[in-house]
Length: 152
Image 1 (spheres, rainbow, N blue to C red):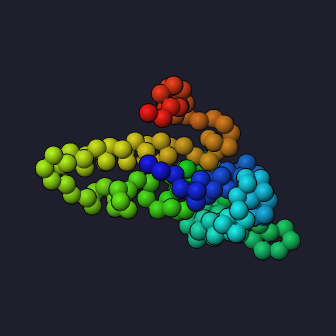
Image 2: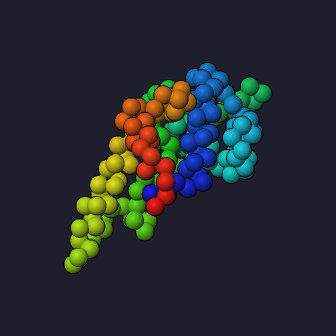
């Protein structure tokens, strides 16, 4: 799985909004500066998050962006899907739509299992978890494995 810059920026922007609280609105410029995200790129991402129902925008002097619902009800997967589409695809195709033959037939259940594990983590972890630095124990356990930190 590859996390695109767009998905990474979207999650980081959403985390800035989560950390600001339910009532605070942040300007795109402030989010961009805080996270080191190119402002113009962020504007497009915030527009997608707004159209996806994850953020609300308000114009005016006190305007800006805020989360459309509580941070504990928005999974990291929700943000990635709005910003980038499906969590796992193979050559841009969702695994259930693939077909293999011969010795490659067993690839399909492998890709399905990969997708299921990615979903299990990203659907479980919310913006509130990450913003509060309180990841679920299962996620922490996976990250504590030294092999998780090396590239074979």
